[in-house]
Length: 541
Ligand SMILES: Cc1cc2nc3c(=O)[nH]c(=O)nc-3n(C[C@H](O)[C@H](O)[C@H](O)COP(=O)(O)OP(=O)(O)OC[C@H]3O[C@@H](n4cnc5c(N)ncnc54)[C@H](O)[C@@H]3O)c2cc1C
Image (cartoon, protein in one colour):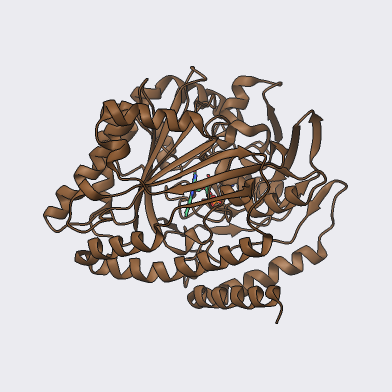
């Protein structure tokens, strides 16, 4: 048996293992995708590539009612009047026309990895699932190292990576989300980000977005045409209409030197005065930085001996140190680990008193210093299979102060809360806390918005596995603390609606920008065809 056959068989085993409960639905989905690709009429420029659709998308959709929809984590559900699966621009126009005639509301969804209620639509509305809008147009060379690529809203992160890698010359995005099984319409319209500091959030790489509005008109937004409208339209929360495509800036492929270290927690978080400047120096010295904390990672129920996991990336001219076969093997192993890890976490959620022991065990297994040079996409999507572990996640962004002292305070508040709770035998946070750092965005609704382009935002998040008792209260308390102390703003794609007082707080903190966004939005959707309950309150309706 060749190595590739072995890998293919192993992958199949994993897919079988992870898809047992959703087998029926997934095999049906696969048939429709394949037959659609075969029969597709390819337009002059688009390149259509076979889908790498991930088995974990909408993993809870196998509900008895064919119109029932739920997101990946299962914390959002709705039963719309009709669900559409368009494959062409013409079909998108037809859906808007049908909604106009029937006076229906519309929300869109892709693979459903968002935790907030963004895709939830009232029961007489339409849900448009855009996963089959997945054409990628040929990359265009602008000048020097600048290239652009236009892709339809449903293009998977992995599919764009693969296409750019195979391009002559090979191309890549400078930054991305860790997960490669999400789609660009979802990640860009909600303001997602990676760990690269200098290149900001992903919407900051967009040069053009095309959206069909409530009048049935396809609008093209670009900085050159109208910078204010463009800044509102990129992170549009699905409120401007159905997004057809985004165009993003990409660059020639590059390598990243990636290191994983596990220093004592106290190295960076003993005090704000000492730890803050150390974190700042590390962030400014790296292309990307990510810091993780696994609760209870040493025995003894105290933070004093706990360790961090620090991931750092630097651009490198050194050759790649991991062969494509080794990389494939690593991904298969990671998929296996997360599949097995999911079982442990499930057990932990059902038996909370085991949390310290199991978290310590998991961290001990993971803890292994490493150093490698990888092509950018492999380094950015360093962990395969993270969506094998269904979890809940609340994330906020706040501006780091001059010495990053507030970064240490925000982090240490959570650690104090974790151990305070543990003293009462409560374990609401059982997965991880992590933070990444990005420079300010000028997109109107970005959680990292700032007029100072050099401001650095700390994107901090806390995650627990689904069904963890107490996580909602815990994360609401932490979110409120970050808002009150550091004027933090929520990540629109993660959990935020449960934080007490968040809508009035956001109106008070960012009212001017919300009003500016609303004035532009109204031009494209005066009757609120694309509005939902949460966003209506946020926009002052
Ligand atoms: C395991 C995991 C890891 C993650 N890692 C990161 C990370 O590293 N960084 C980060 O920032 N986020 C991260 N996220 C969040 C994730 O990137 C976002 O939730 C993203 O939106 C998910 O993409 P999706 O394809 O699932 O979109 P969905 O969740 O299906 O859709 C999101 C929203 O996009 C809008 N939308 C999508 N397509 C259209 C369209 N054509 N027209 C109008 N509106 C549209 C809708 O409002 C919809 O509600 C992670 C999520 C998970 C579950």
